[in-house]
Image (tube, rainbow, N blue to C red):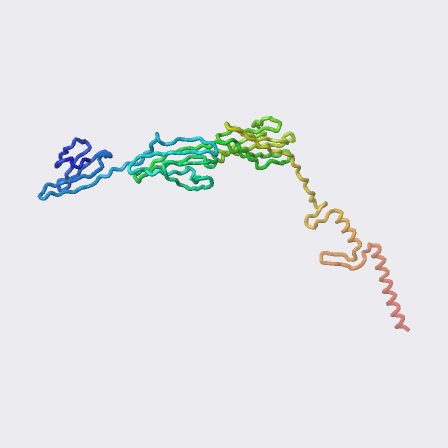
Length: 342
């Protein structure tokens, strides 16, 4: 305001400004009201009491303005070839002068390359201009320019940096085996920007179409990375051979090759009791040998141990042996009696 201009006397506003008014609370307090404050209202104000001597009190009005992005002077979305450079500019107005801070929307670090070998990483970069050199695909994404000056609210603008490069395909397993009548999965990892057209085909050039046996899906892992998946159900002999995953965009194309072969199932080992005892490891032939050896053994075993130690005999042999033993005993007794009689 003009330091010499008189704005109001008592409750009467002198200046031609409809935004000014004066109030009095019927005691000793007078208040100057300014509506819709503008930058030109900044300055010193004096309240004067015409006594003898005169008394006065001064105050300074500071007018602050929250930050605002100057869009006509600020960069927009950019497309940059991989290895190239990009300069992002952000202009803002406000009072006090706003401070510009750059961040990546995904929270990753901003890479600044100073010279041929120097490289620094930071989560925040200050300044109206953000310079990206020798840019790589990992730096692709949205960048935020944030303007703040201590007067809320802070404001920001989002700028998307698109890095272009030809497709790149990585095949985790180039040789895949599976038995017949099973399901098998083939995988290719693709990186491409701008977005590529991806498809599968046989090694003879026949394109694969999704049906009840062939199922193709894609999963996006990032702005430029996609995983291609081909599932073949109820594998047949005619399915064996080479498969190609192909990716094409406006810059170039790439392909990966996977060879599918038949894997034979191993025959299960027979573990039936008659053929093989899993605990003892004895088969039928071994059992026959053991039974043959038992017939020549001199011991007969019962549930509580050996019942007889000696050669094995049959029933007729046992009967003759019994008679022989009785005759021998009778002869011994008879001999003793004759000795006594004599």
